[in-house]
Length: 617
Ligand code: GDP
Ligand code: PGA
Ligand code: MN
Image (cartoon, rainbow, N blue to C red; front, top):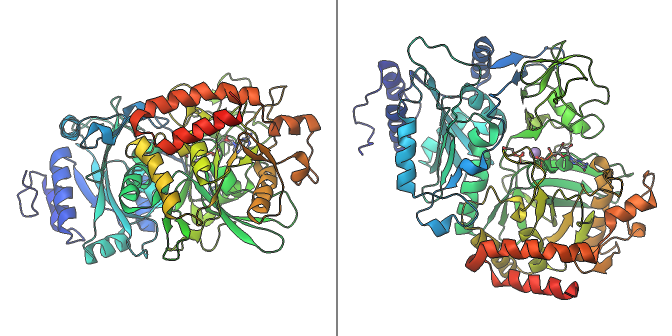
């Protein structure tokens, strides 16, 4: 297919005009945008500049169209609520594909289709899919524009909601395009369409989308094609699609890591600072932990990132980490003044888009867990009148706030340092009612990788499908590994060998274990600072613990419990390592390793056998 910039375009005059007056001379970009416009047939084409004026114009238009509700200026300035189609509320893992050239490249944990076949299928869907709509071209960069090798992308989308959300989540617009053009830089092509074309005169709906959905990554092309959904992880293509799936494939080729991790800075009363990263599956506590407000005297926590971490070794061999994002796309329910005051303060500054939360009668928002007191009347996320007697939750369990990271009061000043921050520890964590203790330390890097590789968690509302089912989620990356999962584990093992002596210590936490009464055994949230203190104590060679078959676990006396209201029994329930429970874990791990089959690194088999020996099976 001829995609040269001089080829005649079948587009209408408005689109042709926008192509001819493009604010860039980047040949590959111009050719690609023209090709997409020819395929999707939009009415208009807009080069997104990222300005405040553009945000105001787009949000005004969306309010007019009924896509957004403007919130009361005195409560949430410059903020809006969006309500999705009830079928478009979460990531769709069953419709997410890694279309590598070879099936092995995606497998065995990803959906795969031959890339040519997939492109043919999707071209049929994209044909005319932007009819009656405006195609927005969003130049963006993940991470710093000042990085040595900035990671550029361009998202083409027919959704103004996506444009405004991307403006919060990434650095977008004119400055990005200028640098991309000046350096003739490589960029990731990220194509997004709602799949809801409008016939001439056809009225629009507040949340256009399509029953047919595809979230497709082409790792060799470094390209993303997304169709049919307007929801965050499916549509804000810089986030999970680029910064995790495509970036993990790039990282594998280049010897670094793109991970599903929060990063925080913890400073002790002696002013010693450590940076730690935490990999927890979606809706398992990353954002909350990243914004922790310590409950222990003299300890200070600052946030670097809440969802994604890019980690590279510097010339001195130190593993350094950057947060590639510029915003938070956080789970609303459970976020409240008592659990995550830092998030509440950030959204209260405004400039925020809420999705699928409930509306209060005075122009504010509410969700389960936001306040102890439940409002007497709300409009729920489906637009229905709601009272505390209503059967359904007022906000969708996966409702979200999308807010600029700069509004976080406890943001570490070095959060956007292009060189990143040096990493002391990696913490894996999942959501398990049983078996997994509050915290433990792995014996060494290889054992820690095994712990990450066998991470297990109960499924949540962040992805469509059943909730509460235990599944293996390696490094919390199961839905985000852009290549073969066995090769991914081998990459972790290999980096540990190549950089021995420089690797962070690996810990494992579980905030979600239940006590014998079925309640959370550990109070969580700010009290997790006590766990952080133990972790820092271990790093500094100061804290003690007990050797168990799964790792080193603190005894009650090893934790700072000053001022904590917890019974001995609950603490025991939180910290317990029950050998019988762990023996029952083994078949599940075995089964998971069988799925990986011949791509499973031998080091993981060795670690499995060592665990068996320690459990005396
Ligand atoms: P993320 O998707 O990994 O960023 O997860 P979030 O931090 O948004 O948390 C997801 C859900 O888990 C929210 O409902 C939180 O209130 C809840 N959560 C987070 N941390 C804790 C904790 O320490 N204890 C308990 N019980 N719940 C938590
Ligand atoms: P998260 O992912 O639950 O890990 O925050 C959200 C998404 O779907 O983008
Ligand atoms: Mn989050």
